[in-house]
Amino acid sequence: MIPLAAGIMVFTISNRDLAAIDLWPLPIAFQAPVFSIALAGVFAGFIIGAIIAWISAGRTRTRNRQLMRQLENQVRELAILKEQLKKAETQIASHPGTNLALPRRDADAA
Image (tube, rainbow, N blue to C red; front, side, top):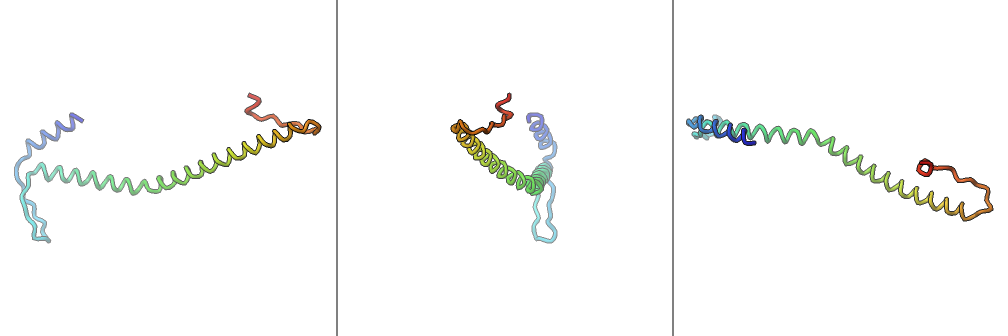
């Protein structure tokens, strides 16, 4: 950041001459230092580029929101299914006379 600021300061000091700006179709004409015209152009280009980048990333942001909603729904569904599985295992275990074997789950095997 410091080298950039130093470069801008050197550019500003060395380009203090006035330049005439005439916005031809409009009746506007004025004089401004060359450094202010150049820095205004750089700033305008930066802002326009940022706006274009923000607009072009809109689809990605929309897709990310959709995927996050899907992930939240899947996590909720997984929690519900785990609870149902736990209830089913408890019911099966509470009936010792039944001849049903509980399948081994990968989490239990590890």
